[in-house]
Structures are given as structure tokens and as C-alpha cells.
Image (tube, helix red, strand yellow):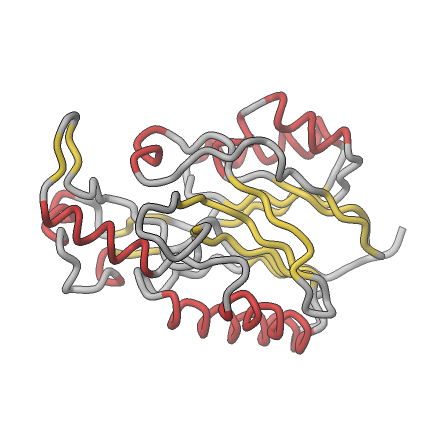
Length: 248
């Protein structure tokens, strides 16, 4: 068995800013490629943000105007797989000669009514978008802002380094979802997340043993100060810890 160098990039987004987040991602991908990494993994919802701490003004039966404005901003910074942002990420993968997986908030079209999905995008070293996975069951209050995947996007890809595939965050606690990955013969299992607890580390070790595979877990390191000061509901962060999310 040969060896392959991989990069697990536990950086923060430029929150709520898809253009700046993509620029940051491309810079990080280039740095990983310069260090001879062949597989690069970035965290869940890297573009444009995992919106920890926000409710988007939602209560059962109502939603306030500030929350609506924040939702619109989040939606506008989501990406479409047919858009120029995906081409930019593909070029970064090609220029660095890497297999790339990155967490994005995906939308289906240009209408404000389109559902948002928490997705993983996969790129080959020739810059092609070779697949995506939509999170099957957003966790808890994530369901207020993200739709559910239908199970049709659970790919695994054969590469010269082994078969690559994975699941997003809480999906890794779902036995049948894991079995779907194992059944495809996944050998390098990708697990981007927003979970920084010690129990997550135990889950990663369990998957490695259960699936007889290598596991790459990836989280963001985000502090409260990284949030834009002009977010419409920034006051919701007042009771949140200074470190919002740690690398896993």
C-alpha cells in the first residue's frame, strides 16, 4: 500500500460572504497543493458560512423582519452548481492538482423561493465537478434554513489513492447512511462537520474501525469576532461563547 498526503483545512469562512470565502478557499487549496497534498478537505458549509448562533428571527408561527433580511443575505451568498463560483473552485483544484471536497450552501436557482441545501462538492484534479452530496437530515434547528436531501446524492469516487466518499456532520451518526458508504467500498471517508465535542472524535474513530477505512474529519475554527459587525441580528450572538466552533 502506497502513501498519499492529504490536507484537512480547519479554517473559518469569511462569514456570509461567498466571494471572499471562495477567494480564501482558493488560497488555502493552493497552499495545500504547494505542500504536495493530493486530497484536500474543507469544512461543512465553508461557503458562505455555518450560521452558528442565529435563529433568523424564527419562532413557531412567526418570523421577524430582521430575520427575513438575514435569511435573504444568506440566500444571496449561497451558490449554484452551474454558477461561476463552482468553476473558480474547479480551477483551484486543477491548478493545484488535487482532489477537492468542500462544504457549501447550495441553491437550485435564482428565485428567492428556492430551497437551500447543505452540500459537499467533489472536484477532480482536472478541475471537473465530479459529484455532490446533499445532507440528508439537517440537524435540529438547521431544518429552519436547509432542506433535506433525498438520498440520490451519496456518491463515492474511484481514484488512484482509493475510493473516496463521505457524509456531513450528524449524518455520521446514521447507521444506514454509513452502510451506504461502506457498501460502495469507500476507503478514504470524508466527514466535514460543525461538531467540536469529544464525542465527535469517538465517532470518527468508530467509523474508521467499523468501515475499515481512513477517516478525515474537518471542522472550522470560528470566533465571535469573525462575524461581520453589520449582520442584521448580530445581537443574537451576545450570549454565545467567544469561540463559536473549534477545529475537530
